[in-house]
Image (cartoon, rainbow, N blue to C red; front, side):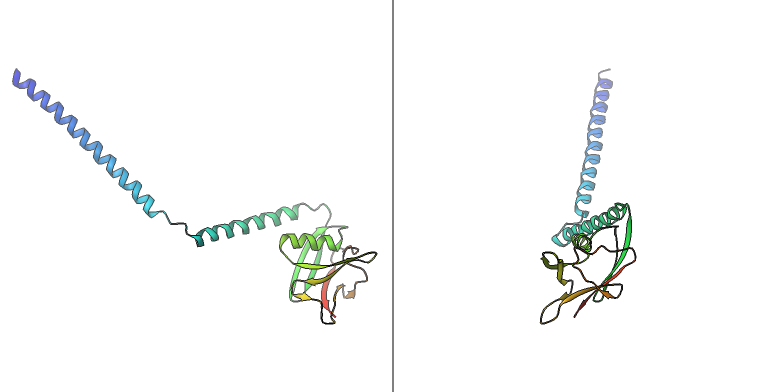
Length: 167
């Protein structure tokens, strides 16, 4: 009877040791897989971070352009030609050409500068790669005819073709 009790205790101890051994194997294999996953994780170097930022900015710009197209209650379309650059602009009816240029500049579609004159309006001296100077001045033409007012006084109409030229 004594012997069977000892054998029973040994069996229980052996079962406990075996269970602990199995748990240790499971624990260490899980830890190794966790380490493998961490080792396989790509390193975010500066170039990767810049690529992520650039892609995020492009997505924001696309979203902003889509939102801007939806905002117009009475939309019109204007074709703007600046040297070799041609841009089709959707805008709100009765918006000054100056406001349209400012809006497009904020979107990053073009860059311009100039000067405002009392009673004449705002006159553009530089737009994208066209720059007035050395006896040449920047003029805009609407449907082939030279404009007679500054951009702040001109209200584009649907279908206008507005072209910038140095003269």
